Length: 315
Length: 177
Image 1 (cartoon, rainbow over the protein chains, first blue to last red):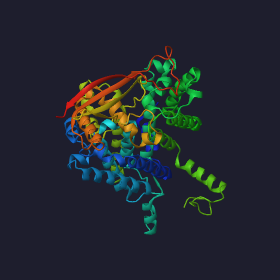
Image 2: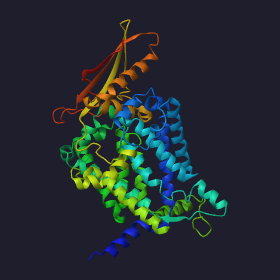
Image 3: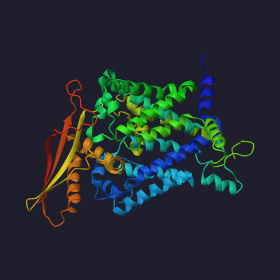
Image 4: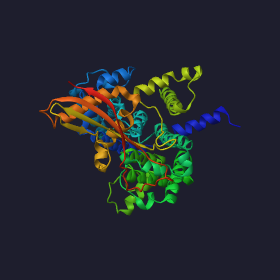
């Protein structure tokens, strides 16, 4: 019978086991770099999206969202200089997050900057932008800079090295967040008739405004379209559930990566697919990352960055 | 100190779970309304409302875009199509195309988003002023173009095919002079 103690022990083991933080550090670098590029790509449109002469005026935003928001635009005037200031603050913060310098402050700076820009014009946002905020809300509390960062290098030089291990609750929350995305989207889709009759992928890929490359060998064949539709449903369900079981994890993650690459090629949903692929990597634990590193280190005849000592342990 | 951190982390974990469940729980009861008040404040302040409904319950079958047209005093006209995305390169979609598509196809065209129309018409004026600096504008019109993808059993479009017959309706006019 399940007792409170048993459940509490399970909860603690799941969320608070001390483990190396390499997985979080690798995720910080990948995520920081991807979001940095995402924001950098807006460089030519800062005025149009966020400026006082932008596509939506500040008056409309203020009237529509009078409640409190963690947005710098709520405390400064929406001038051109301020819009650029917030944009540059966000970019610099994201760069610092990626290299891991003053990381905790940079994580908060990035979160506030991103929320400020997003809340300035919510009518241009997509799921990728929501995902960025959801992940940053978790990442700001993580020990993602204890290794593979400028902070950890400087701390080592000062003779006060940061602990390599840390509690993994933020990493677990990121994993749960990824599963929740897939489970909710699966739940919402099974209520639709086109996902059942196999035509959903046909309609999604026929939206002229969202087309990327054309794939006639796959998307002009009714049978393959049906298999793609049902395959999408199955993979999304598996990524929310089976991925938690070690035996299923790698095939399910590979299925997920193929699904996202397929969408990336056929449809224009910028950044979202890469974000999901990076997030899927969070299902591998630090020990597995270490094994992968060790394997590639020896396979590539020690040509990659040496992080191992003579005994084969991490430096 | 460690136990305080642990308590804080537990509270945060439960809070994040609540944000994940928010969209899918009944909210019309007093009980949920009370429990979810702090979650709602948090979600609206950071924008972490978790509605992962892309392509569900069914993918949209309507393709739409908006074109803004400016008439000048000399009788000439010019248009701005909010980078409608059809035929746009992948790089441009990454740079700005998807954001403009989201704005015009999913928001600006909608009758529920009338509050965006005036700003958008002024934006069109500004965008076209760069090309028509010496002309005096008299009228801006926003027109939505749309087409519904027919049932695939009635008409099967090849993936490389673009539909040509878009319906149109001028939904907003701003007399500048």
